[in-house]
Amino acid sequence: MWSLLSSWGPGPLVAQQNEALRFAQAYQTIDQYVEQQMSAAHTPGRALAVTNREGLLRVSAYGFADTKARIPVTPETRFEIGSISKSFAAIAVLQLRKQGKVDVDKPLTDYLPWLGIDSRYAPITVHHFLTHTAGIQSDRDDVPSSLYQPLVLAEKPTGYAPGTRFAYSNVGYETLSVMVEQLTGKSFPEVTEERILRPLGMTHSDPAITHDSRRQLAVGYVPMYDDRPARPSDPLVEGTWLEYGAGDANLASTPADLAAYLRMLLNHGVGPNGRIISEEDFGLMTQRTVIMDQKEKPPVY
Image (cartoon, rainbow, N blue to C red):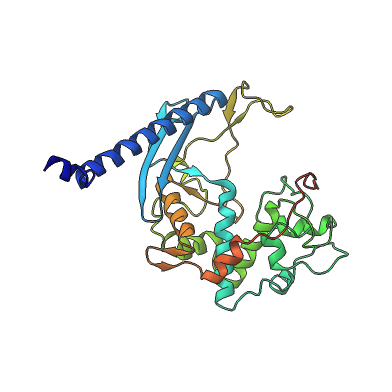
């Protein structure tokens, strides 16, 4: 009888225990790696979420959200997510496309007639702005307002024909968020909240970096020396604080909330309450647009 039973393999309980052990070992390896990387880079704090298509698996926190006050990072700590915000802006544009309010193949000046771009090439489309292929030169970091950034595009000529080369552009997504505001009659943070955060259940995220949200945020740190390339051994100081609501970097979130966003992407645009974007628009969002020669360095403008 024993040989017969053992031929069936382990029972469900044993299989669950083995799976739990494998997960525990994997998480321990991840924790060790994160701590090693934090030590090497002198990173004050981090947070990590693990998810699959079905749901959240784990949230872990490391180090300090504020080194001066010795406030530890917790799963509820919110971090500014920087340029990940651009993907939210792209979704907002594609939602408007689905509603027939935007044609991504039309010039962006069709929607912002006042937008002045000094270009001797063909008109720059919404698609070009979405894919960082508009030919726009480097941003004006001395003009932080999201409205005036697009206005000063007229000060510099474009660097190449639109759609031919890739050059990362913050001001491109700032301009797209202004277009979204013009077409919806709402602020971009309001659009982000109503169309993406709320439907995905991201209730611990901020659609704009504001003074009111600052107390919930981890302190940002930058290398102390700004006159030389940064090295891991350089000391860190608190970064400059400013409010921000434009579509290139407007969001703050927790690991669990970002995991909810990731699940939507893993499920091709489907969230817990239905679709955020259509399958077609998800394909547009994730397509490859400019194939870069790996031997050639990206252009710098």
